[in-house]
Image: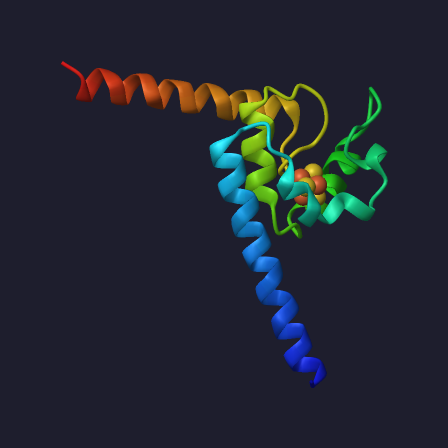
Length: 117
Ligand code: SF4
């Protein structure tokens, strides 16, 4: 088998694995199957769980790292659904996730008000 073929097979398996991890998370919001595909698996955890007083550069570095991650959306979904209060998850700080959660709640409330008489 040629190297390109091997890479194609591995890529397809990875995509399928991520799809299965997504299904697992949707079925059970505590599922961590997506972490098998996390870019940060080989990174220093302290780069994502920053010490108090960490600067904007440190945050931006972590966010940029997340932007290369194949499971960024699943990571963010997990963190928001699990009320993770520490660390960078899915490229978002705890404050940004709180704001996102609030927007989702408001949108849900407005949608319910409009659609449910
Ligand atoms: S999005 Fe960031 S924190 Fe989440 S798994 Fe990927 S690299 Fe790690």
